Length: 384
Length: 249
Image (cartoon, rainbow over all chains, first blue to last red; front, side, top):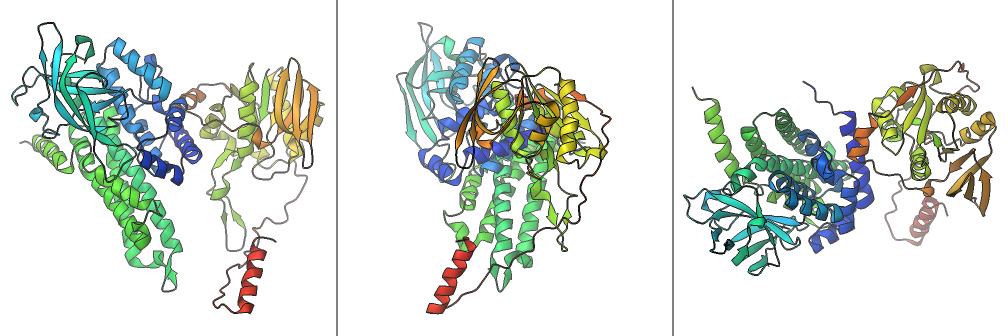
């Protein structure tokens, strides 16, 4: 068993640290949260430094790398920036397109990505009544006599949906009923007649806002379909496991930043004539926080390592998504508590991290859905 | 233009611990590329259209594979090293002598660029000593370089003036850090670094100590905290004096 990072991974972390100290500061982060996006300059620099190309195949100009290294990339950016960013969403969106798109679609999306560092499209998967219960989805396309399709439906929690010009939508083929499992993916220009959006206001993670998206008699053509007809959602599910892991990696980095802030504050803040770090109640908090992060880290990287070995992580990815975001949220909460009143102001970033991490207990599948996924796998695993 | 860049591996200063008796504990300090050498590598990578070769002389720290890959991930094509535990603590003269051997190994070149000084000692001596060893012209404190054929047009920043100097290659220059912001090595550069040529060169040079270290201690801690708790004229004057002292006014 080897927990050591490679030279390359250690150098990557040094580069990330340098990148974050050069391009991120608290004033800028605050303005990015107010403006609802990472700046164009940072997105471009992120791409040009090669971080945004990691995990993309070489034939499309990318830098292939293992899943463990992608986890490190995500964790360390959150750690050194001290906030969530859209980098992880952008990487996942490009992975979806590269895996399922036609050569023409991939070229179109990669050209736009290489130009700006932003994917040209957001992902429209969830619906008000269909999140992890994807069979309940009712968005539907119906084929017309002229060979086109008409899309009707509504999507929600579309991250960066108002910012990005296209959307990748999953919709049922022909029949919206629960029994119909045939779904397809469509890449739709938001300027297409019948597409509209409405903002949703988050209480955290405002740096990457989401929105509602409505499709009223939107005319689609066959060339807008991404991947094979009928297997849209099955395709997407393959990438959900990686999404869960990268969400946890982002939680881990943010919670690590909160822990470091709190530990440093505890050695400086004095009450009753001595630093609060000398009180056992604070020491207990710091100890449990460190344990929570180490447990999350071990579970996360073992899962990513198994993915790199080609092993199934259906159970592992649900376990890490069940455990990690809650553990990291609790670390942020305890970090805030160590700061006392100061932690509950906007003077310190710990409050922002605490709010952001609460969202990750829901994003990519709630903690409760993870129990549903893991529970079934565990009974299978131990079946007599 | 083919450029050689001598670099130094130093210990991470943040990891050096001060013991109770003010002596320094280096045992936890990891080796790293000296900060000012990153600027020298960057400007070399920008103008070195015919290859950039890094050179280094030192002790065990140079065996660290991560350090070597770090150098090679910064626009460097090849690395030449002389690594020997006897060379752990060479003085500037001996370092320049050993570097001169590496320069010979690296073959023909147009320009040698050095950083402002090493991040540990900042003696700023190796550049001039190397110029002496190689019998080359040297220009220090260079803040801008323009290449015109075999000629360099250099801007040199001094405390009270700015000089414009022209020099024929081959030559040696040492630069001020502002000349170029070091690149952030991306994953592609990092992955490529491990595949680039690294040459280990042994020399016959005998390491001798020209100076003896009598003591190496951290400065004494000065108690600067003062409590002034009332608003009397005397206390306010005392407070103002303390502020002036802290700001060195």
